[in-house]
Structures are given as C-alpha cells and as structure tokens.
Length: 88
Image 1 (cartoon, helix red, strand yellow):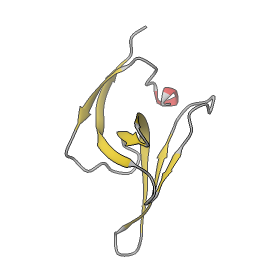
Image 2 (spheres, rainbow, N blue to C red):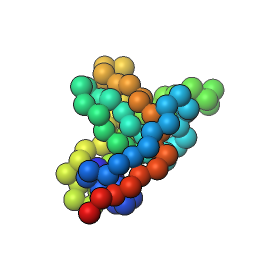
Image 3 (tube, helix red, strand yellow):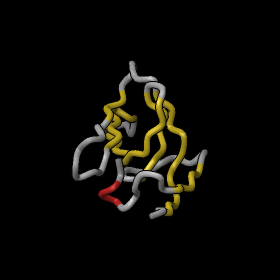
C-alpha cells in the first residue's frame, strides 16, 4: 500500500517499537486482525489531544484503502518503519 513511496510488496522493513510516530511517518499497524504499513496522519485538538487518526495508503492504483481509526476499531500501533529494502 506504499508503492508511491518506493516501498513495494515483499520489501523487508526495519521497525522501531516504543517511539511515538510523528505526522507522515510510516507505521506498522494492526487493524481489525491484520497488519498494514500506512502513513500516520493524526489530527490534534487545541489541547494537543488526539481527535482523529487516519492511516493512509500511498498507491497510484488505489487498491489499498485508507483507514479511519475510531473507538470501535481494533487497532494497535505496532511500530515505526525506520528503513526498507526492496527485492526484485
């Protein structure tokens, strides 16, 4: 779901756990029973409290969907992607 950023299917990625991602970081998330690599797009209110979270795909074919995370979503932020290697 991140081909537009140069991370293709079967890429090997390094994940750093335990650090807070910033807006536009690539993260690994567990959503409704599956793992996904997505772009972290949070929105904060005036008190710096998370009010909205979107996990975005970056793929020109739009076959991978974006996710809006709310209180009903089974969601775990697994870690932040810190490097990737594509195999051809």
